[in-house]
Image (cartoon, rainbow over all chains, first blue to last red):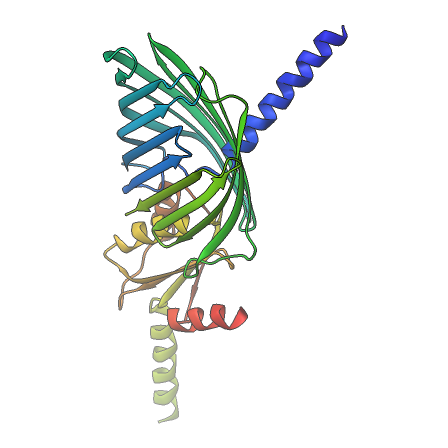
Length: 221
Length: 109
């Protein structure tokens, strides 16, 4: 009985951690008829570049390239996807907004250890909530091929020191927790980030608990 | 003579009430980030009747200055904002210029 309770508690804690990681993520759909280009460097474990076009605010289509570099097994995966993002639900509140995003993609993965090329697919989702002072997002991303199965869960919590407006610089301090499965990284990777954005540009940079760089750059136009 | 003046005055009042207001002010829910504002601005600027757009997150305000003698009907505005992913809570036509709105918002900070 106590074992079951412990398992339930662990599951709840794990879901909560995932949820927190999603909070500080960028959105995969910026706005209708908008193009988004973004690049993320994740402390040497994950590097990703993406480009999307959104015909409506509900969905976007694009391509991405992901490099995963395992800290444990020294396994590398280079994955190129064609991807679609979908916004099934948005809540527009008086001074807040919340979103549920889901996405999926198919492509080719190059497996570093064996030099094989394989079919690969990806599914993921994100929940985020933001006001002009607080931000929270939880994101989960599953990457599959016959040679590997990796899930990356990211929770982000952000606080803005002041309420920005459209014409002013937005400043956010973000705490991130990220978990990788499939022997990419053992334990939870924490990072502290400074996020700046104004008009169509977004810059985010910080460091993990190991002192490794975590950075992201995004443009919408 | 007096009756002529009254008629002219009445005509002027009628003409003024029939003329389109220069600015349309929309109160919008969900307006919390610069990217939201960017999408809305881009959408509204595509309308041929739009002269200028001003967005204030602080005031949940989207203000559209229309070209002379032009107007954008409420249903078109609501649809434009809905298609951009936001909800319009109120629409008002005012005589405040976008410049005065900008100054007002700036002065509040």
